[in-house]
Length: 213
Image (cartoon, rainbow, N blue to C red):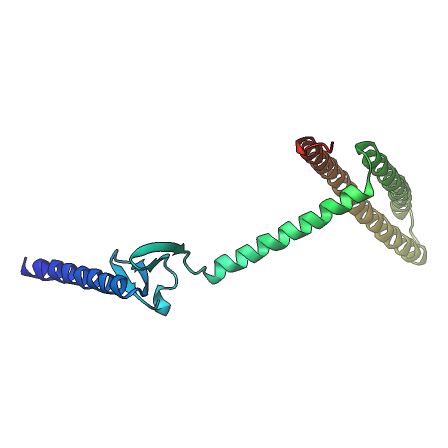
């Protein structure tokens, strides 16, 4: 119980000293800084120690609050702030390019259709290559069961391996191209929505401007 009394007395005395320092500085016209530590204790000083830089501080001049100084940001917060700033700059540059490249949504749609048509043609050619290689591979495998001579079988196996390679390569390229086509289509859809938002915002801004007399 006595320990609690001593702790309470220390807190009271500490607060009294801080208040006395604040009153003295106010009388002298000095600038004081007030902050609260992790234990909830208020501190007053004409200088802010490094360990208190992470705390929000009040600047007091002649006993009156002049301004509230924000706490110092952590390295993680500064890095996140820089990341968000870069993202905003990149988005602004993309928006400018989008507005400069197209005069209407129909132009974006026309460009999208051209790109997708070109990709579809490539996909058709690749699909034909896959189908042809698959058909030829099936024929060679059927022949393989009927070949008895070792020399003929070796040559046939080489052809089978060659067509297997061509088949899988064409299939892989076709798969990647389909993924690319889907990504292009999705990007154009995002561009159309963003373009509409930008144009709508621009029109609203124009309506809000006073007309010249």
